[in-house]
Amino acid sequence: MSQVIGKIDYTLDIRGEPWPYPVIYALDALETMKVGEVLQVIADCPQSFSSVPQEVVKHGYQVVNEPKRVGQD
Image 1 (spheres, one colour):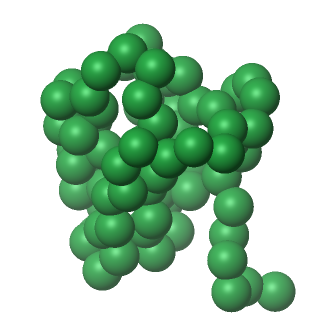
Image 2 (image 1 turned 45 degrees about the vertical axis):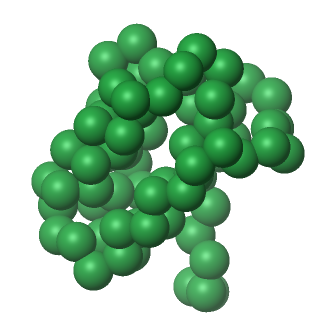
């Protein structure tokens, strides 16, 4: 993981989708994007928190922000 990026080019809201769909949809979206564009993934599937970043890196993409859990204490 590298620097924090403020500019988001696309948002993929996949709340309600069970694993493994968040990974599949994120990789599909990344394939359509240009180099340097930033994809924000919003998911509520617990496995997505670790699996989406791991899989996108495994497929050659870069995670630019640490995953954040919102609304959980």
